[in-house]
Image (cartoon, rainbow, N blue to C red):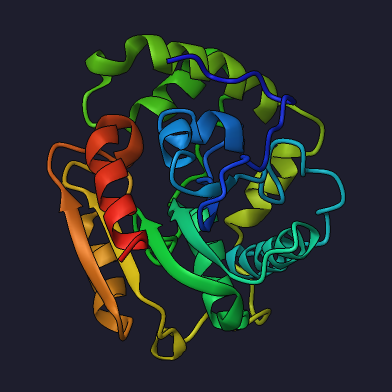
Length: 263
């Protein structure tokens, strides 16, 4: 798989299908292009896909110095997506939110701007589990450390050696951009006060929770609790997949997402 070079942004596809916003995950050095490379072309055949770099990552690091704590970041990213929809003249869109960045932003958006969202797919627990005990990568900001960090995201590293090596080079470069470390560490800072977490009881949208059976980042139980708390959600555990369901099982991912969003 060829991973797009950072900086070559094509945030919206020309498809006339329903709008779909792809919200990437929250690992060090991530950006939208590389996160969704495995599935975006196929999704774009049926949906008008928008895939922005979320605040704090890729091209959107500058100007985020006042944010601290996961809830503040999620709320800011929810506002970012509303602005994105406004700029593209989109009244209502579906969401796919990946893990602690995109998933948490999707939950915040469902709660804060419910009329702008149709259906939502939430991956890997959507940031509803506990904060990590240790911030990954930045205590040892090397290529080997980045490769090890990415390796935990797939179920079987041996099946993705070339991809992981390619991504490690790209994401190391992005993770070392000015301001990237400060922004990343602030996303995992415990903060007293700040925006309240979304109340799952108020999120009445249809939600599909996807979790990899072999996820080494977040246990399946995190998504199970989230799905149980949401009024109209169901959980699909993808056999043989790790945290990166769309990379480990792209065919299954594409089928589940397409069927759910088209229902």
